[in-house]
Length: 251
Image (cartoon, rainbow, N blue to C red; front, side, top):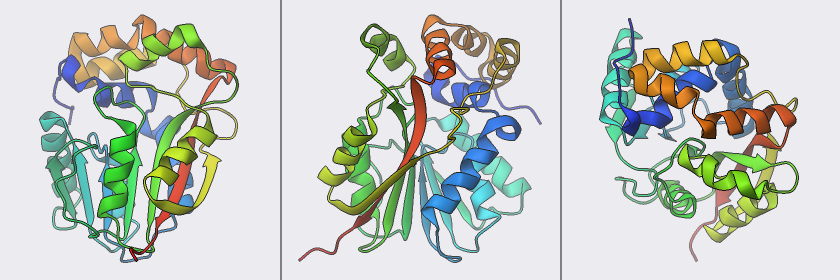
């Protein structure tokens, strides 16, 4: 079954498919992320930035609790719903269209919130993390995956990277954002210690991007911002990190 064609408005989903293919990169990342998040067996989990929900469904096959997932792209949600049903998980994976910085959930309803804040040009990271902290239950964790500078920021690349939703910060800066959202007991680590968080090979990326979003996706995969991103990742200047914080009970 081939994913439906999407235009440039669905660029984040196309980039995930193109640059972080499941078998080559993403599954290993999510094994690390699940170990880091350490959810209870029957935890109620919210997945923010689900895309086609491959990761959320993968998590659901390894836990007995309910998985809610949100993404702003209606095409991704429709595709993810079909995938969940075909995997026999339609009753345990709920998908909804929403933005990371404006979650449609009441306060303190999830045991854990996992937020993928990597390829999302529209989301406000501070607001997204504050929203995640709002909907998680007291004494329960929020885990975010974020792009990080491993050295001095490359100033002339920041505007280009922002075009594809990459807004790297130093890890200490991300920890401060998590702290400002009211979370405590903050810990962090890199997702892939060897820096391999993007797949190698331009041709493969173009093919995957075309499958996910047609010619617009293929053009994005070879665009200057993506070339800049791949070059910085190969140099180890940008990596992917996980940050975990716990919501403290209100006094």
